[in-house]
Amino acid sequence: MATGRSISALAQSDGRVYVYLADEVTGRRFLEAAQEEGFTFPDRVLPTQRHYAEIMAVDADGTLHYVGAVGRIAFGAGAERIGESRLLRVDFQRYAAGEREYLMRGYDNGSK
Image (cartoon, rainbow, N blue to C red; front, side, top):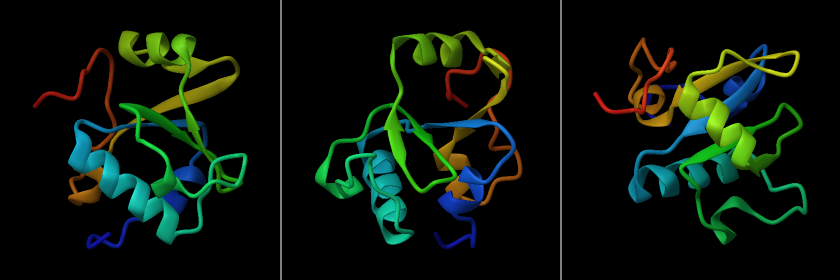
């Protein structure tokens, strides 16, 4: 990413990291960046060999995950926690652009 930010840095955050991908271009950009940083899906498939989803999770162990129904509901409702973990909702467009405010707070569907 041109801003010097990385997906790896997000994955090391204190909490469960869900990344919002607003459109196909953003989704492809995310998957390409994740692959460049060495991320894979749990079954070792490379990110660019799969399709993006509007919401994806990144883990500190270098894996990407699709978010299931309960996680998507929590994301959309503006939940602040998933179980015992803090939920960090990252707008990838804002993050990659270097914007200071890239965390989505409360009920925020990503629209500006």
